[in-house]
Image 1 (cartoon, helix red, strand yellow):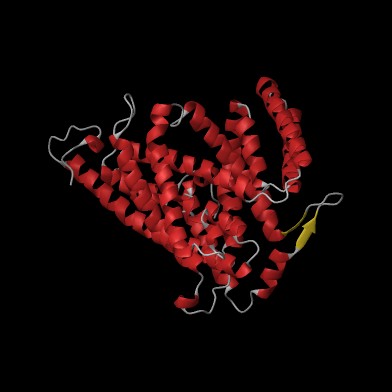
Image 2: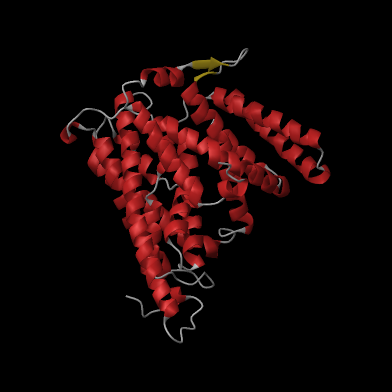
Length: 401
């Protein structure tokens, strides 16, 4: 079966593909024949003449995933300059809600797993997977007003910013500032080349950008800062027209190959043969903090944001719509899986349980959000079907339950 590029650029199919890839990884890891695949993922591949020597699994999470972060950064830059976050008035409401969606899950996590061995996992439940959340919204939210998607998109993008900061600041190790300085110089060269590409469109300029991008990635990886930050830096500085074209060209590969491959590798975890009482507190903290912490934090802070919104800000969302967005925000998945790998890199046992916590917590959030979004969408469809209904934006109604 041939899958079109437009299907891979959509919202529903990539979300299903991610879930299937993660499920397959978890299944194969727990079969008796898992040793050969585990050995393959642990196989190291070095770049001759450099200090880069990574396992296959790390080439996926540090190398291929940098392309995903490049696309995320391009979208982020667009939203900050021409999209839903291009002014303080637009950004203040989702920003406050996003703060709640970070602070409350952190608090929940630390209450459950704040001990010395597991406290460092507190960033894990702060992430929202944009692709997954929008995919669930598209599948179950037929009839919801576009304002819900706009709010969720802005919320998830702000979550991505926070996640990027966590990755760059919290998980840098023995930073080699000279190498990072050279990476910044390479980023400046990439910026200049992108301007030249915008002006000339010459394929040699595009080829030079690819080379400079790879060099930037190598320098960032060798500097001790997580290599995915290279993708963020390159995406933020790229000229808008080449950036839009790059995003359009890369989205099918990111959604159809890179993210499913990462989900497969990250979910390749052996389920421990332990009683629930012997599971790590990190596991339980993530399982609770993702679905419960996110929905409570986003709903509470989102409601507060709607009460104090500045003059000229977008119309307030009904509280039920904010709850729906909060439920979707609990689907952490991609970035949460990466954070789990980084937070417990030195403790494979806790790391694997944290990954299982991300998978289970995200699955619970997915199920919860599917129910909440479906109920909310049905209410809107019922309102729209009422005789004489003239409201173009039912979300503004004060008559809803």
